[in-house]
Image (cartoon, rainbow, N blue to C red):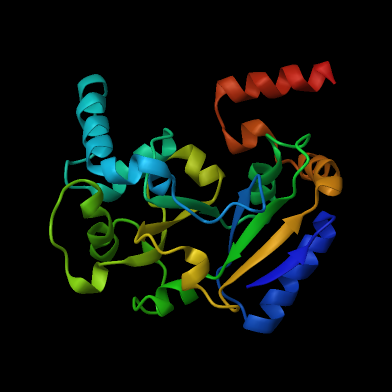
Amino acid sequence: MLEFEINSIDGMVNHIKELIDKYGEQPIWFRGQENSKWSLMPSIQRGSLRLKENYITNDFYIYVNQIEDNMPDNNNYAAWMSLMQHYGLPTRILDWTSSPLIACYFALEKNIEKQNDSCIWVLMPQRVNEKEGFGGYVYPMDVYTVQQMLITAFKKTEIEEKFQDKIIACHSVEKNLRMYSQQSSFTVHNSERRLEAVCDEKTLFKFVIPYAYKRQIYESIRILGISTHFIYPDMEHVSKDIVNKYNE
């Protein structure tokens, strides 16, 4: 896996251009992480939670159906998994975005003062699916293939061998303003293999943001319009941005 150090938005854009020139025009996804040493591990696989996934998803399904109307059909696993991810439940999916600026926001917004390097992971999703045997295509999340990758998160059942121990890249299809604003897509991890181990040097890259440049890059993305209420388009975050604006 190739790593690049970035110290400015211009530097990041130049590295992205280099990847496009080298590997051709294809979708490129980005994921910001606060610590460059963290691996690409879905939240459900951290600690003992991986042994309790069915309990967690079913509790969410039961309680949410008691308090909310117009919930997805019970077998629409993609829709339920999107809701769970959206509201902070541990899941087997990782968030990605097609915007490197949004990835920068998530890498930096909560940890500018922490004395560690942050990073942006860069993924070629078509190549992931090709390497995993799903062809060079990025599916919508609600297709049969992805549903089969999700079903075991909800119940103990046998699935076809071609869906076992796999990772797949897919597009979000939920009608959700936050996901639309964040230009969200996902990798679904029906496997405890790390994405780093699945990908080769043409599929996954890392942009490391050194501690010394975190504030400079964060200020740059704010100037370019990546504010909190852009990421979370609701009245609560509009209010927070207004207060922060006049407290500066």
